[in-house]
Image (cartoon, rainbow over all chains, first blue to last red; front, side, top):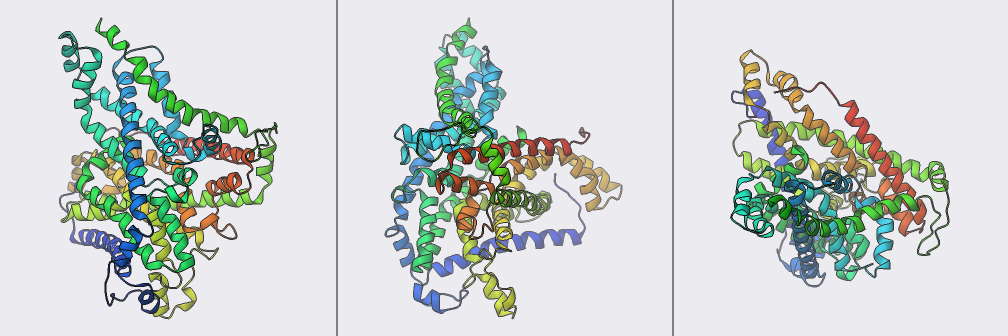
Amino acid sequence: MSTQRQPTFSRGLVYLALALAGLSTLSAFVWVFLISLKTTTEFLTTSPFSVPQAPSFDNYRSAWATARMGYYFGNSLLAATVGAGVSVLISAFAAYVLARVVFPLRETIARYLLVGYMVPLMLTFVPLFFMMSKMGLASGLLPLVLLYVASGIPFNTFVLRGFFASLPGEMEESAAIDGASPLRTFWQIMMPLAWPGLVSAFLLNFVSLWNEFFLALLFLQKESATLPLGLFYMAQRAEYSAQWTELFAGILLASVPPLVIFALLQDHITRGITQGAVKG
Amino acid sequence: MIERARRRLVLPFLLPTLCIYSLLIFVPLALTLAYSFTNWQGHTLARPFFGLGNYRLLLMDPQVRTAFAHTVVFAAAGGFVVFGPALFFSWALSCSIRFKSVFRYLLIAPLVLSVVVVGLLWKLLYNPVFGPFDVALRAIGLDAWALPWLGDSRTALAAVILATAWHQLGMWVLLLSAGLERIPNELGEAARMDGASEWQVYRHVTLPLLWGVLRLLFVLWIILSLQVFAQVWVMVPHGGAAGAAEVMATLIYKRAFASHQWGLACALATALMLVILVTSLVMERLTRRDTVEY
């Protein structure tokens, strides 16, 4: 809803508030950036607002290599890509039949899958951790990815079911009449049609898994951490060793990729978010 | 004929999802309920039946009471700190203004940052030695006000709430904007023609039409905020020395992994699930108004 005529006063207020909010966010990052260019000695002896005397990217180098952020980065990329990809793919299978094939217990199964939407893994982690240990999956990227796949299922099947249901049925019918098998119709007709929905769902899953902390804390050791967990341990180290400047660099290294990706894919990601909440 | 052929897809297409979901989401949920009635201690396999013992214990535990109170404060105060600005900014972004996409990006971008990144960023901002807040306060002579915000038991929870609000603002602005977009323009225009002020238009036209979305978002906020964990764990490790920022989720985690009272942790988790369920149902009821058709 856009308002056309507006009094100057309220318009000025709008600009002022937006500018203040934007500037405060920007200035926090500028502050982190400036400190990340300082050496530890300079940081501890000068004002936290001063411009670095001899700006250097050493902190980034040591955060990436010595503090192993590069390795954590790879782990995060792997876990988030596989977790989001597999989750969206298998949810798409389920969502397709739940949306477009009539069979007994259809609504019951859909409702059963929605239960997980209300109950987060945050509250069932005790038996979960125990079960995973019993299966020899108490630690490492494999159990983490499995849980990432599982945790996306309720949201993905719910959203994609709605998406498949909204697609026109004629092409599916005519493909079937032309003799294409149901499986082929699904792969060659329905999946391409559902592509925008699949992409939005994947990106949204990816962003939330890239940032996931709780399950990583539960299932990963320090040595095999993902980026959020690695950063968490790096901050603990910084408090004891006063390696603050490296932490500032680490925070920026972890923030820039998602911020850039978001700038490029804003529409896809926001569509995914609003699909899940407002339209549902 | 076609229907029958397609029905052959049902089982193979449902199976992977149903297996993974049942094993990793549903079974742990059922087991959490079941184990909450046992006196299960840590890694032993013995899970002696304990009846409602855990529930009796947690009702008497002052730490549970504190954590519960903090969780309620987090959800309620956080709700105001998030929804107030989110309502304002979603409205501001719906106005015809210049540089809208820049403002929009700056406002909602933090939602793609990890809660760890945001927690650590704010931990640095709150730092009593080099954090900008305290440096600025000392510079203008308010030394007594330059508190260790996260270390002081009077301010720790509020400091976590503020940081969370900053992180989450964009998410709720985005969702409210999606709600606003669905409201047709003409209604506000008509009211404006009749001489209504911007505030009157918002209060009497926009807000009633937005209500359906807003109450859904309230419920969503309640569900999410009552299980808050990571923000606290990152900014105030272990919920603070004196439990200053202890919330239900951090307490459950500590009961499970620090003191190995797994049965008790399951009971706490079940209780929190019930609280979430009841609160969201009550919220849904309380916010029910006559729906406005448009």
